[in-house]
Length: 248
Image 1 (cartoon, helix red, strand yellow):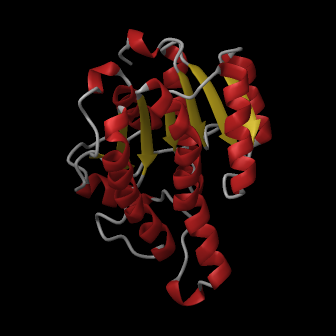
Image 2 (cartoon, rainbow, N blue to C red):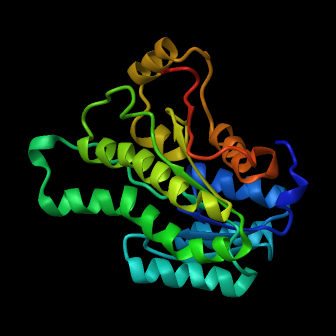
């Protein structure tokens, strides 16, 4: 991973940072010398990651769908490390579901974890960024809605809305020096994907649809996210980066 000297000592919050793509993002920022706040439900993995990476990482157990708890967790990172320079809205839940089985509560829950928390986490850190006249927010979307994937309508609906949220925030806060971008991963081989969804048939589909004939891994996404928060990306905002090996 490239090293961006300007990221040293920057304060970064990563939601859903204890595993999968989020963990790779946390590790990526830690390599840069940033101070990272990790928000996640998985207390054991979060504490293990904090222990491994040292005092530059501050873990806060948090259910991002509980908005008061989310705001309190961001405040805890602020108290531990200082004002927030970058926010990575990564937490999500990609559980497959059939449209005819979806209840109102289930729908609201998918929107809460995949979209709603991104807005309110952004709202919580924007005053820090406005005060500094600089900041970066990266919202994690998904290529699933771009390719028209079925079997998960609440997920694809919320992930497509991430792009609208990103562009609205970029427009509203660009005058304050805040950059807002979206990153849409393709089929990334996280532990969860390998355990639940990757089969010989799906591997065949991946190989047929991707231009790149290799598995995509969490670091493939983390590299893009870290870059977007660096000064090397200082003119980039209001954009949607797809990291899917050329599926789209």
